[in-house]
Image 1 (cartoon, rainbow, N blue to C red):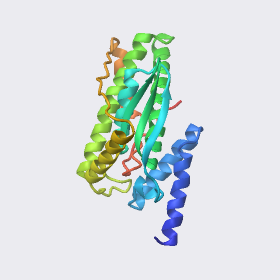
Image 2: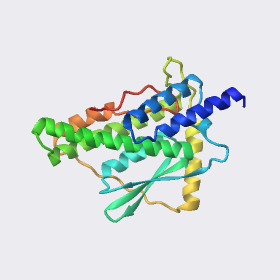
Image 3: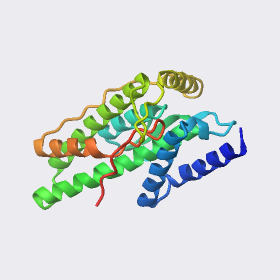
Length: 240
């Protein structure tokens, strides 16, 4: 690897570290810059990994775990070449992302930002419509957002596998079906060796407020699912 390539990778690793910033504006600026550089130089998150990087897990503790969050976690995990499972902890849970370090840390980071955005917007829209937080509206909002985000994750994965995605300059990116299949095998093997057999469970959600569901669907269509791994252009995070 040339010195210029080494410098480029080091610069992108610094941007990757900034995506974990507690300052949301700084984190999203770093995400967009990294996104652009990866696409421009025809690189992926895998190129930023250190040689010794291995498959492992990243945990996110969730208080009052709700089914809609679990579905979003699974979708984002799959989008970023990871697998996901949950560890119940009484009324709380640990959401676990399994993959290489670069992929699992970024998946967990995007998940937390998406959840934060959806919850903020649900409160904002409820107060805007009713003057207060109405539980039925908020629950409907969460369900609508969850369903749209899940579908968007699957659409992006399918497009990435088919090689129909474009970078910021309009160039078609290589198909990533082999990368997705390899990542799944590696994560599944790690889980089998370190966790054991996992039980699958359907996440049941329902929306009793049509207005909340509709607003949630709109938010789910806009919230950023930054496709850093392949350069897909994404709308900015909702924010006020």
